[in-house]
Figure: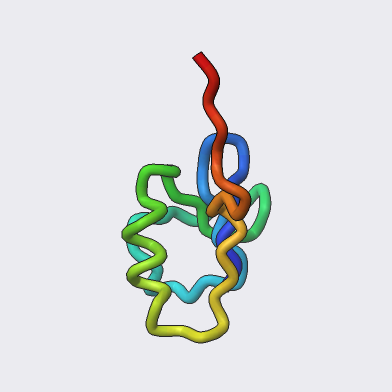
Length: 65
C-alpha cells in the first residue's frame, strides 16, 4: 500500500478494501481519505511491512516569522 498526499487529501494506492476512514475514488482507481486521518491510517497500516508513506515530510519544516 502506498500513502501519498494529493490535493489536500491522502491517496491510498493498492489499499485493501478494509482500509478505514477512506472512500473509493473512481477517478484514480484508489482509496482517498481526508488528510487529518494520516496518523490513524499509519497506525492501521503498521500491520503491513509493505506500506510506503509518501505523505510524511522527510526533511522537516522551517518556519520564519
